[in-house]
Image 1 (cartoon, one colour):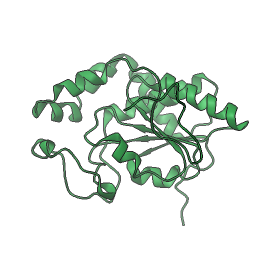
Image 2 (tube, one colour; image 1 turned 180 degrees about the vertical axis):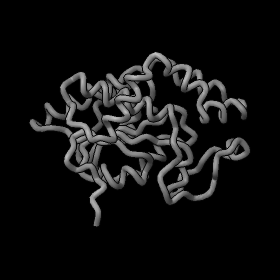
Image 3 (cartoon, one colour; image 1 turned 135 degrees about the vertical axis):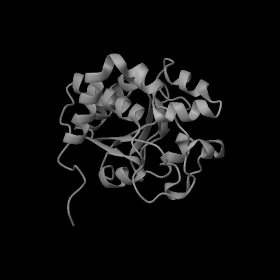
Image 4 (tube, one colour; image 1 turned 90 degrees about the vertical axis):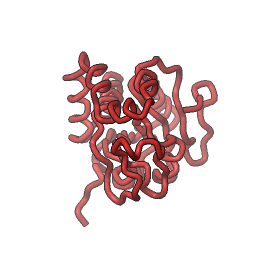
Length: 211
């Protein structure tokens, strides 16, 4: 079988639950990037490979995520493999997750999806921010896919607010009266947002809060 798993790299990047299945099975941390969620992130976490700790990242979580990776490496005494997974659009139904019914009329498919989700610029940029924060801490053994996401973020850093506000996802949410979700995406976050503790581990109590 052709290798699609980015297994040579410490920091990896993929799209949706299908991408996670390919690159995250041996990871120690999965970063689920969903800036403008249409599916409960805790539901999405249940679709990801068993074992790794799963944390949620939006536009303001990169630093907390990078610090968590450093903590895991210290605990392990070895490197921590990180799978950064962009949720994308329409990923929710993979494996049975439910998309908000109000979004169907705005172009959000509610049929089961067996493939990777559609591209979402907001998730690409937030994923790139995570990869950039990791590189700033010396964790830079990134796959080409992760490096490309990072370059998208660093190259467009000053335009992030505009790009996210004008994105397909934001337009869709605003069209069904959920513009507050877009505004909330730019609000500062506090601490690590843990969706699932790793196998045999408790989530870090001092950092964990509900998504």
